Length: 477
Image (cartoon, rainbow, N blue to C red):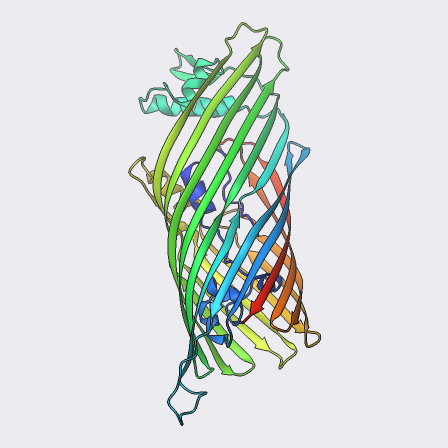
């Protein structure tokens, strides 16, 4: 499961979270993950409960399965020529699904292969986003200081006739990192460049969906489906950015800006889809998914801690906790796919999914969302996700699968796609089956720890690699 690079600033607020929570993926079984998660036109798999609900119309028996997963993620950061690595490993429960087959009885004497043949019902639990990740980067920065960022905030407040009291820029002034130049009527940094800077971020949590769907079969040609998802999100983040300026004997300090966040939310969306078979070997499928409407609660702790060495400057610590709630609307999604079946030997399939991240919107009774929504419109745009895969039936019981996927970046400019490669095996014995899949995701992103303008803001290059293993055990009944 891939986590997308969604922003270029580490200190961004709710606009960053809005996009993060909009990049969730469709839940699926190991079989579908092995073919790159391409499922729009395949049908007949339990993944249809949370994907294209029309695929439920292909079932001719009831079925259930469970899928645990193991995730291993490594983030390599490069900052001013210095490389560092953070790792994270988790064991999670990825998917549990059930479908109940219900044939429609036709009157005696009528063709039982024509008309509405069945209406099947399904329910599933899916883990749709994984936030577990440790990232670290650091190096010697002789171009700027985080105190420049505090200075810019203070001067913005000064220009707007706002008080600095109780805000980050006020804490920086109180701790001696910036000073007010009265003759020039502006704030200035007290620091001199050439400081060791480190950023350490740990994130936890994920998004899950409880899906309820139905799919109908008309004459073994047209399959229609409708689904409803109830979603949950949990996102915990701890970040500490440290600047150690120990190179100057008259002004040596160590300062840490920290931000800890706990976010929870619930939401819902609706899906509708179809699959059509013009001939037995070809299937076309498409799904539309409404925006997910979330209600989100957020608790954020922010602090600034500074200590000095032999300078006479007072050490200090300031902090505060902010509670907020807001409503989030994620983008509308449209997806289509094609599958070609080669008799009993297997199939090849591909999907394309389109969404526009700039339509993501926030609203809140607790804070002004104007800047966040403007940032979303300015920074984010359309994205295309593409997936291809194939399944080969090697024997009557043994299957071999492979797939490839590209998850488009939500950023308008300088965004990097996430690429995935997957492969798996399947074995059928009687009414039981077992599928195993390995998936590798890779992506890169540039992160700006603090923004002081395009020419002077420092940039860390992060490369993320994740290795995921899935195992599905199922039963037909």
